Image (cartoon, rainbow, N blue to C red):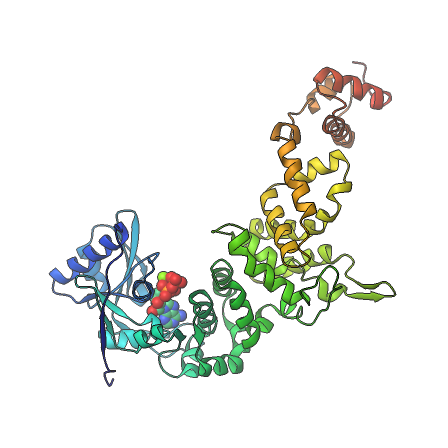
Length: 462
Ligand code: ATP
Ligand code: MG
């Protein structure tokens, strides 16, 4: 290839970083054995931007077998692609042999790879900002692809023609959106145009890869913009048409002065870093994205205005379909569905009878339910009365009041002369209810309560 105008820059390593020190040692070990080796990719981008990388990737002229011979603890994670994981201390480092990728037959994986030199290796990478090399000994950054200029100009630009690069690996379209969103960079207009044209091809990518990229967008800063870019580029319509359909779904202005359901959803996403904690969870983020997905299909107008009857229940069903399609685990899916199905119940907390309220407040992961509700309010009318009410009730009712120890078991009921069967559930439920209402608080009182209300249904003499 024609060598790009190489630009050089010296960056200083992060202070007190064991992970960085580990990467330096690996590079030095490779070099002492006569190989070339550099830090590469996202970690160099992060260092140039003054942030501390999560992990470090290394490229080298050494072949995988040579890498495995040089280090004690290695795992051939991507043997077919020349990638070896070197474990040092508590960290794993991906050490990749210089390579160029063969033709991509299916828009997903290269047919084969060829080992080559450092130039080929950086040219096969996706974006210029991800194609930087660094010599960790001196801190010198080597830029063969124009990445430094693009970091300065805050631009996500493919290495080479975006159409060709997206055709090779369609996931790069989503990655482009992700880097623009999380780094707060703009997307090169040519890349935007290419994504708009090729967006339907994203469907050929595996559900798992798509899900992981989306989750990364949703759990990092810039998530509102990430979702806006998804909408603008047409990727959202391809991947989550149910969410794209929220745009233009108008809502009653008294509760939703912010605008349509899409704007409401975007506002909630935007508020997440500030109000849901610095490390908000994927479960909550997906619940926010999908919580009102039922509104597009339940929209109903009558003389009293616009309604979305049952949008929580129908939305949960739609979310189940969506998450199944994206191959979420059952546990993740259930957690999100639970949040969606219950999100409207907050409206009624102040009228709930004690038992219902206690059962509501002790739902698993109530903290997430409460955060979703907080974001729902802040992303619309801003009225926090129900939220504050839940907080004050939680303060008033310590865990032992919310989930008091069981007073009776099925064994106790048998001893009292009841026959096991569906009746047990009914009786134990009634005892719990009486307990939550404060009408019984000891086993003795519970027995008396059972005899009083269910005594005539005993089958065997006690
Ligand atoms: P982060 O880890 O913060 O998501 P990253 O840039 O480290 O960002 P990774 O997915 O960890 O991204 O990939 C590491 C490097 O591998 C990238 O910086 C890029 O150089 C290259 N890379 C990753 N995925 C692709 C891809 N689909 N096409 C081309 N190059 C890629
Ligand atoms: Mg990375």
